[in-house]
Image 1 (cartoon, rainbow, N blue to C red):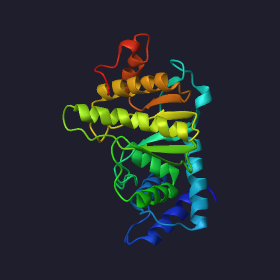
Image 2: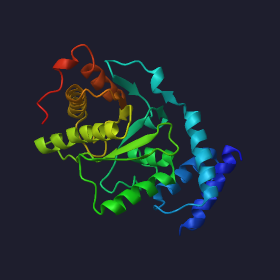
Image 3: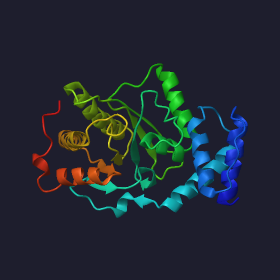
Length: 268
């Protein structure tokens, strides 16, 4: 199958699964991609046929290849064991990436939403939502802020995804919310250590839809990671992944020559 044929097969398969009626499949490739992403996003966690998964996997892996994959080994550290990289986290090849998840841990069901949760679930494939649903079924309650779970990455270039729920902030962050955000980083690092993960890429947890101020979140992220590595002698390589220029500038300042003095108030 060509990539166009795969896309049409997946669209027809997903439309046949659900109650969506009267949807006209657009002729343009970009419009078809948007429709396919919408159908991926709204699909509930349920089994899929082997042929569907084979076609989906081939399609998603080719889409990621076309976007361009960045390998950790091609990046230069800004400090020992610490990296700063601006780009699409779904195209990064390292051991694990971090997903800023919601408390249901099932991904974003809003069609084509711009959050990182939506992007990761879209390009990992429908297997990821099913894996997360199994975790949540066994757990029996929503995921608490500041904790982490691990799943395979399926079609992404990395091997694992660490899912963590950051605090939702309304106004200035409280001490409790700052502590919860710091706990997200520690929980992911602990889980990485226990799972044999040697490199981990953190997104800017809680700063998007959860409204944590970007500058304070960056301070907490850098300080927490540094303290963890110092206190545990962890050799896990950490990539601070950003997508927006303002976040890149924040992290660059924090990780520069004066970074030891950065970090603001003490994080408990």
